[in-house]
Image (cartoon, rainbow, N blue to C red; front, side, top):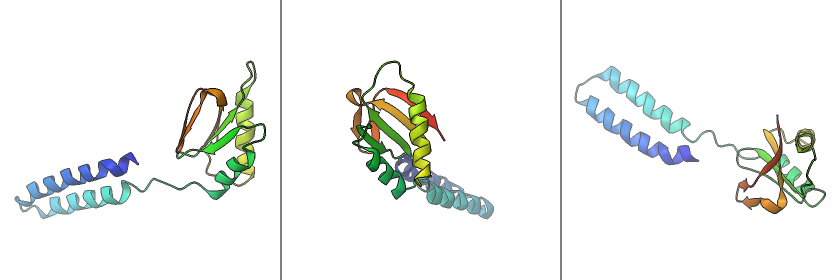
Length: 137
């Protein structure tokens, strides 16, 4: 989303440059600036993809079992909150849940992270807390 906020400012600066070069009657320069302006407008906010229903359903299905809470963030990371016990291999647990999510059709999940439920805070689209284990696709 930060791209969507900065795109109007970039567009405004390109319009000012376009008007500056318009006085020089440089038709080729006008065409290039127009193409740059058009490409910025088209691609500035095009990277935001919605989460798949399979990823959200998977997170909801494992919540309440040995996993106290699970969610998928805006950047396609599966976050699993558990009661942490010291000395455990949480990377292996994250790897297990990542592979299980992919088997259940959540192909857009890029990473799985395990956090301690008592020290983490679930926000809208994000989780703040200490990460105990992680696994990447």
